Length: 427
Picture (spheres, rainbow, N blue to C red):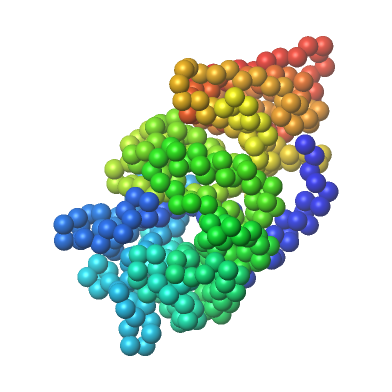
């Protein structure tokens, strides 16, 4: 497929119209507590897993010392239940004094000392989803508080607020953040609440005010939940692709790889498709007890490279028959007005053995006349195979799993020989 003639202009506009902070040029990466640790505040009986400064320091240590930071996982994100049940006499939020005795500023200092960044959670309504003080009527003071604490990302939820008012509510926090004196990545839940209310989100407005946004249900620790998110993204891909770009990203929610609900192959599928979505890669797991096989998936630099591709173009599903899907995403490098591509072959079947899928390169829209160097991204140590548009790409995909390849614009000349070839990627 050729580059759209207005590509350069569109990429510039996406950056220029985003929240006025110059951040999130590629999807943010890091760790977030919610799915794995929820609102566990019982530090007396479960001190290792409760929402406390200890938990976030532990995860910062793991990101910094276990090879995650070097790959781009830089945010340590607090979620709900961190604050005291009431504001202080000046109307400011305060951290729970028992669970965060040093305060959020000290925690931010610790995280920064590891070369990482700290994220925090709030709600645009009167209360957070767990019943802690919300930001309604306190946008300016809360934004300034977070800036004074040297927070780097804010996730603003939407409980206890009317979705019909969110087109006016969320921009209030955008304005407050822009006036705070600190550049803070802004994560919104705005379109998710409006979708649930049967409204059609205004993604142009959302993209002008937020760096990333949730637009579907909370992820749960199950394959069923992951599939429901994938289905939503496929069904709404035209709207979501148009909304996303550098500085503004669709957020399908956390990576649950390494928890209890996904097999090894299902975990590969989530990682591959989140890369195709150009999604934030925010893990919610226990990095202190992560099995090596799941760490290998999460630290695959080739798949991370697709996710962080500087074009910032979200991919799409181009084939869906008999529980076999093909997803493609345009990526760098480009040449002669053509893209390279990341391609995911996804087998949704849950019984039987591997399914063989065969397609010519041109059959999935890869028509660059000089061909592509195709590499298996889960078995990246294998040498790339050169394929021309008329050649056949053959993969064998296990149930509930994926094969992911990158087809890179080739520097080689087209083969001047009168036959085609087949390249087999076999699991």
